[in-house]
Amino acid sequence: MAEDRDGVVVYWRPLCAFCMKLRFRLLFTRLRYTKVNIWRDPEAAFVRSVADGNETVPTVTVAGRAMVNPSKKQLMEAVATHAPHLLSRTG
Image 1 (spheres, rainbow, N blue to C red):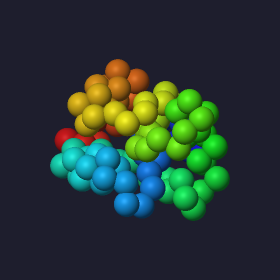
Image 2: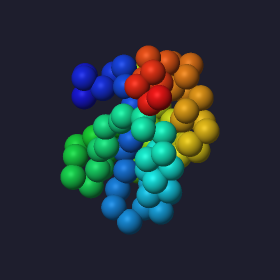
Image 3: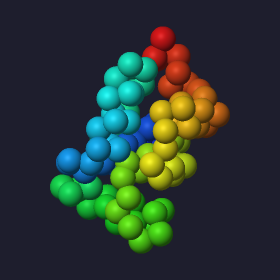
Image 4: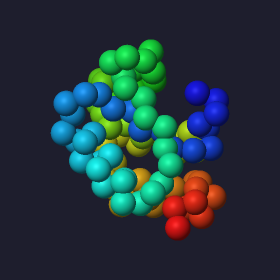
């Protein structure tokens, strides 16, 4: 996913309550991000590599930096620090 190295990627899976909660909260930020369903995409291997061998979701990358099960606040702080150019689009 080279095109997403400077952006935000949310790795999720169906029926995950934590994923639904984070994605719902992100609706109100208008932050653009790419969604990757780990049950349909081979990206699950990446999730395991950053989550101690587990498929813990949501796992999120911000400008290539991984966060496992972040809160909306943690995610937005990471965007402000590592990808502030994305915030100008949310406004």
